[in-house]
View 1 (cartoon, rainbow, N blue to C red):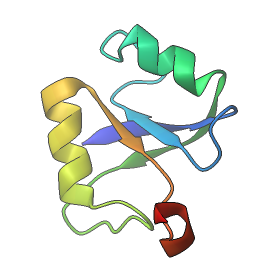
View 2: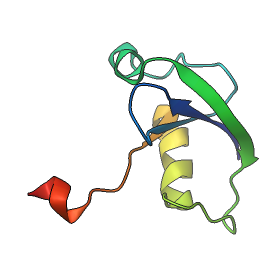
View 3: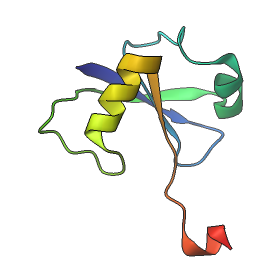
View 4: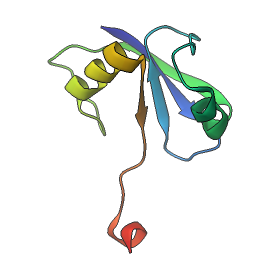
Amino acid sequence: MKCVVYKSERKQDAYLYIEREDDFTRVPEALLSLLGRLDRVMALELTEERRLAQADTQQVRQMLRQQGYYLQMPPQTESALQ
C-alpha cells in the first residue's frame, strides 16, 4: 500500500498519512484546519515488513483503508500527563 506523509506546520510532531498525494478529500475539514499548513515529507510503500519510527504499520494501513487517513501525534510523556 502506498501513502504520502505530511507534517503539520502548526502542531509540532504531528504527521498526516494519506493514500494519494494532495488528496485530502477523506480528511475531515476540522482536522485540516487544526493542523494548518501541511508540508509533504515523503511518499512510501507500507508493507507488512516495513517498520515506522512512531506508528504501528498495520494500524496505519488499516486506518488508511477505513477512513482514508492516519494521524500520528507525538508520544505523550510522563510530564505531559500530569
